[in-house]
Length: 110
Length: 303
Image (cartoon, rainbow over all chains, first blue to last red; front, side, top):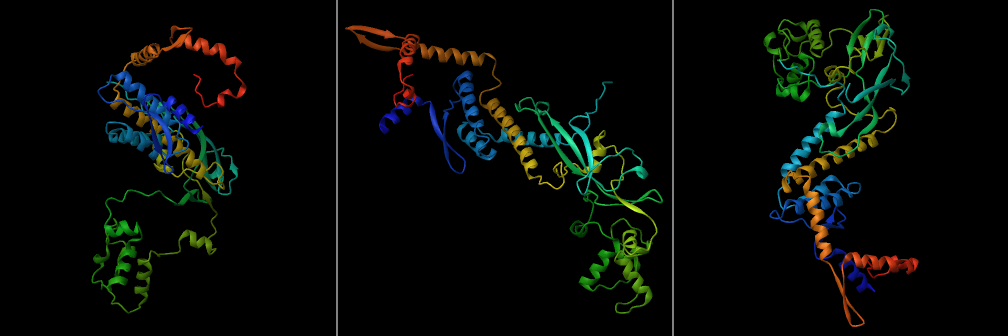
């Protein structure tokens, strides 16, 4: 019986396009699509990346941002430091939004 | 007004207060907090953030002042925000802004330093050498002349009975009130808002006696989700590129092409039959209604 279940599970994961990553302190396994190499066409990279981002975003309510970012950084074949710096900038902007009470000054063209 | 809307004032006991006039004399006492309603659209910050708008209420503490009702003047501002102290000395940075003579008396106490001339005790706090609160006579240490006592008191910042202490001792006949006694301009002017509440105020609950931890968690969660959207968008930009609208079409086309290549070959009465996915799904649909209800729990993958 257990062998049958394993076969069924293998049939679902198909030909190895998926992999299991472990998330957070409790190392919860989640199945995500393997990201393609940088040499693949854009549409293929986009499709695999979309799948990863959707699967990871679904875990936002259970895990901290640091856990999520770590998984994405481990999967991507490129550095994510610049992306994280940009995200930190968005953090500051969003926090400032809480205390904006005035429309930005309009500067007229001379 | 962009994100913040005013709701109401409440006092330190949490009671809602109505304010009908901007004049200090007609203002209610003990105004301590102001409740805001905030509506944030993260797409205004950056269109890469896909979150929905967040609407919530919170309160901020108003700076208090002591107001003399009889003379219609503000005696003292309480709880001022920290100001820039970049030009202060190291000692000032440690102990903050205090009475000018206090630092000198502290130095005397610590190091037993003799003061030879009045100019020695002028600290770099902006006070002039002629200011009575910042000068001492050349009395040797150990003597206790009336002048020395006076100057020691001055050095401790005690020149006369301060208004608050005087009121405590009942030495004054003036009637005072404590509360918010500044202009009501913080809702319409960003500079005024920053002056009143600071640039990074502590967010409190809309009800003063309730815990505001949940409120802050809600804000942190909202910001984290925005950060994640931004992070993923940047990663996608670096990994995939800006892309085009045709990428999705190309991906769909490629997936359909692979699916169409799937076939199932079997023999029926010695005749070889090859079914493509459309044929197979049709045949599955024909037999699926015949299956029992618990078929979904079977270990066999039907389709």
